[in-house]
Image (cartoon, rainbow, N blue to C red):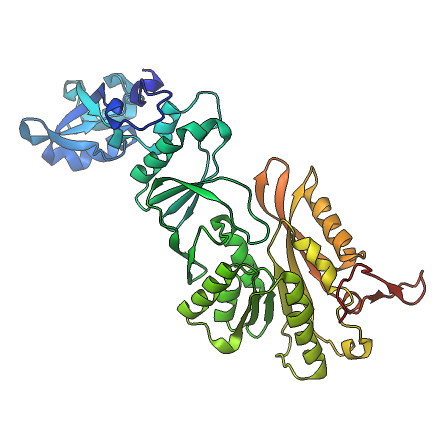
Amino acid sequence: MSASVLAPVGVRGMKVLDREKFLRNVQVPVLKVTEEKLAKVTPICKPYFLKMENFKPVQNFQDETSKKCIHLNPEKVSSWTDISQKDRECLSQHDINESNFQTKELQIKYENWKFEEIFKAVLPENEEMVSSFSTIGHIIHLNLKEHLLDYRPLIGQVLVDKIKTCRTVVNKSNIIDNTYRNFSMEVIAGDEDFLVTVKENRCNFQFDFSKVYWNPRLGKEHERILDFLKLGDVLFDVFCGVGPFSVPAAKRKCKVFANDLNPDSFKWLNHNAKHNKVNSTNFQSYNLDGKDFICTIFRDYITEYCKGNEKLKELSKIHITMNLPAMAVKFLKYFCGIIKDQELLSKLDREIIVYVYCFAVGEDPVSVAKKMVIDNIGTDISSDILDVFDVRNVSPKKEMMRVTFRLTKDVLSGVISDNSEPPLKKICVEQESSV
């Protein structure tokens, strides 16, 4: 039988949801069995079940309370012989044969179709569908292509209807604002309620999704970085958002310096630290520009450590996360020459690891990401790059990359030794602030 037997019909191009138009009457095959045989027959029939939303394949047979009706998928079975010979033989052992096989008319309703099936029947043919979306608490976040914009009300309402946890559907309406890492959005269905709670890495995060940045696709990457951190390590989170790196790190008894320029992110960062019972001795937060955070908070910590005023456990490391992929590499230059006192800096005996994120466009994202980091830090640090990791695909030929590298004393002091050059070669001439 045609594969369209179980698909909605006559709804192509619908822009405002009309659930009544999804009613269909179809002929489906059924097996009529007695209740005492059901337990033995069901496992044999299971591969042939008619599986639809809000529909039970096994039901009471109409007007006969002692018998059951097993509904079979008409796209798999249209006659008794469509059931495999092996399965028919097994059924015959329980006195189930072709006489038990018949068809019945079944009414399929809007409630019986999945949202994917509805979109396939309604939206333009031979065009990209609603291929993916993000779920943030009760909010579904879409990024609809232009050819789907006229279908926004229908798409949103179907998702509210079909996804139990969904109360709000929004469509991203412009690019992310690089200053505060958020974007304008349009509510296309459901409640205009942006206050969400999400769980990640054993922490609960609350925030107003309309005012801060949160991408659920980064949960695994957050976990990877947290696995690099050990008890007693120090984390400088330059663009921390609402705390997906900072809060779990502080919970794991790392000393955390968390910063974000967005005042709403700063507000929810502190809320999440308190809500997750982070010990205040492990956590300090700042509402600064990334440059100022690097040139004051980070610089002062390294200076005080070299003076012996900050203590670290043996083997502890210093980590710096820079998760602002649209522009984080531009802030690397502020590490160069940040501490001019080379004698003081010589006392730095801890490894500093930087995790900087960027968008790499091209055929070779690894090489592109490396070049971006080297160009922006102002000197060839190839030997100190530990890893270049592809975090996720953003769009065709555009990848979100993470470059992990050691931040050396040479970079921090603004000079680099090179046997083929004069003893001291200045680097990072674009350093803008005196320290």
